[in-house]
Image 1 (spheres, rainbow, N blue to C red):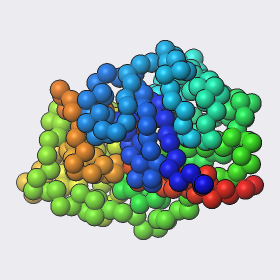
Image 2: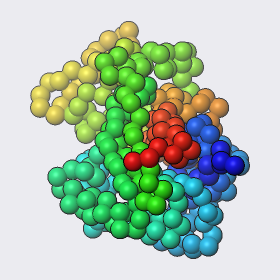
Image 3: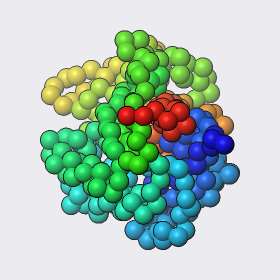
Image 4: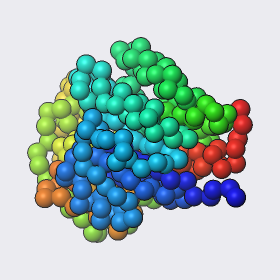
Length: 320
């Protein structure tokens, strides 16, 4: 009898954007892990049927991780990010990539999925990235990777991320990345958050840094959002905010108008843009932690698209 429900173990789970996408595609996420204690209440509240373990990946015992068909997860991206210090493998957070590979080697799932920032395949890190791919291949997997932009898959956000998909070589299967569904016409802010104008929910009211004011941070209602980042101070402006006028290189000011209300996107609006339902509860003592939870997540719809293709591959036995 063919197995119809595929099981998943999630590493570096965060609040479970990637997990939710896999659940929506019919996978059973049975066990999840993250090292951030602040995420525990949020994850367990929203993923009641998944066991959640707070522990560094380096400290996980193989025996405590259940057997699963698929291992998913996005190792910390700060050390590879084009917006960060780009220390890559020289950073402890960059080295956990190899802890992830070690667990994949020992557990030997049918498949694995990795999501990470565009900087992973930048010129500075491409040699290390190729080494990572070769290491995955050495431990028994056929590997396929691609840079995807969430806007091309129905997400109201310009967000480029690298996805690495591995299939165990003995299965002799071939994974094909999902086809682009939105190429010239994208899902707009109006369609995504237009109904929240009167009741947007809580939003960060702190000052605007010189870094924030060095670039345009506002999109109009008929546009898609900038990338939703993990830092509250870097959250894009609401479409009804004043325009940002460039007055010199790397310096802008807000247009003076009484017709617009200046504010950043709210928690609820950012969550919508990332694909979380309104009933998804982000539990934290401060608003900055909530923005961090949302910005660090994989857009749910993009995760769902990846999961659907992987499910077809594993259950329909798409041979090479």
